[in-house]
Image (tube, rainbow, N blue to C red; front, side, top):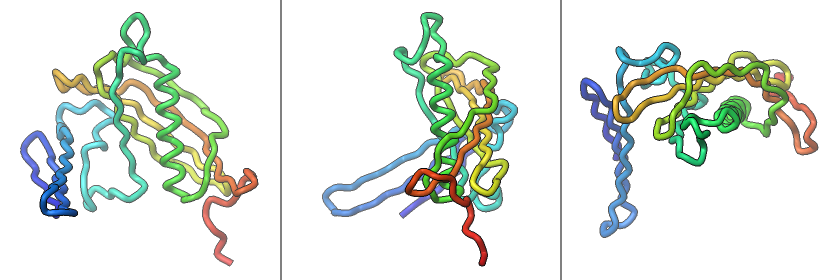
Length: 178
């Protein structure tokens, strides 16, 4: 059984499964819904449902920034942000073609704002171009302060992902219509 409740600021999705009557498992996902206060570039993250064009390849990844991931200034190391962006690009490309993929290159990555410890990082990858065996994936990086709810764009990058076969050679992203 699944229920959806939308209040003026939050969307609550509840999924309740009862594999055994004595053990009730409840999963609750709480997503902040703040279109007016969302940072530019992060607004699409809050559109929901078929009307918003959500498909199985749409992806949002969220990670918490812990002290061991930060520098002595208290901001997230760029290498950790880059690794998270690469992971998001990998998942988006794999979902797009449903084949094994590898990263061929990171074309450009720009960090616009610092991400502080204790903040939540949201990664929003999108396949923007598809070639014969390659996919260009753009990843947006946003941060949210959990206490204030303030959201801001913190970076973006472009990654080239290549679909590979069992021998690790490039293979067609989409099967040929022969």
